[in-house]
Length: 275
DNA sequence: AAGAATCTCAACCGCCCCAGA
DNA sequence: CTCTGGGGCGGTTGAGATTCT
Image (cartoon, rainbow, N blue to C red; front, side, top):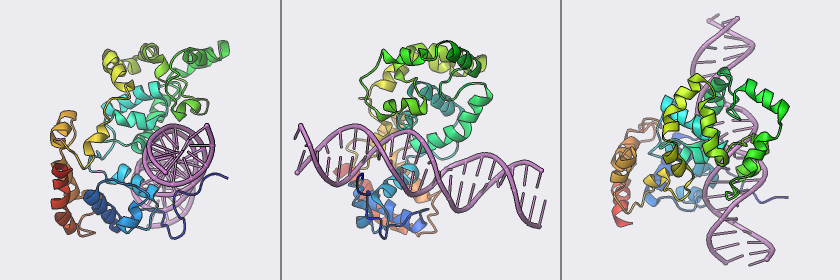
């Protein structure tokens, strides 16, 4: 039952990407932009699944990615967003320029979760663990009731999975939960204070699905000054990104002879003007 | 120094959504 | 309206790195 695999499994390589494969993928994307991912492996000469290519690109090779651990500010934002959105990592990632959903998810699972537990906060409900236990005894379904009343407009699958991930707190109880979160305890409160202060802006920003995604900034065939836009939102300009690729700080330019980039750069970085 | 335990994070898997035929 | 395929998402895994004993 179910659908066919996303690609022909035969002859499809799995596992860590090699520098050579990275190079091929980068070359292809820089030259052609993002097109049908399913076709990318063939066109790029990769023995990989299209999905794998997309993942590799979005999570690792994208030039606008920030590297390194999340800053304290970013971490706080993640906590706050998670309190509102639950495990909707992609939505959360949209609000953190240069960070991927995968990265945030990993950071959550490895760092933040533990931190919150240490602070006595349930990482799922963002409630103090003691308080939660008491409430559960008294009114087991009080949370569910709170959230049933509000937003039924979003049909995101994570909502249907709420019983699984326990993220009953989503945008539903936005304004309400915020203050509650702010009063979780002194530390948490202080940390979230800044965010709380900007609640209204954040609210409108967070759940306005029409809000342009930050990711838009790195789409290659940019028709406008992406440099200006990136500057505006605090991302490196495309020139910087280009430099990033040239530097290849993370995927060993020298390993795979990135001279080729100089060939494609003229094509690629003029694409913005043409397209 | 070496083996065990733990941590980190890139990558995969399977499911769902949605656009287009 | 139904079906199909592509893209995207969240959960999970496992190899390598790091820390501990």
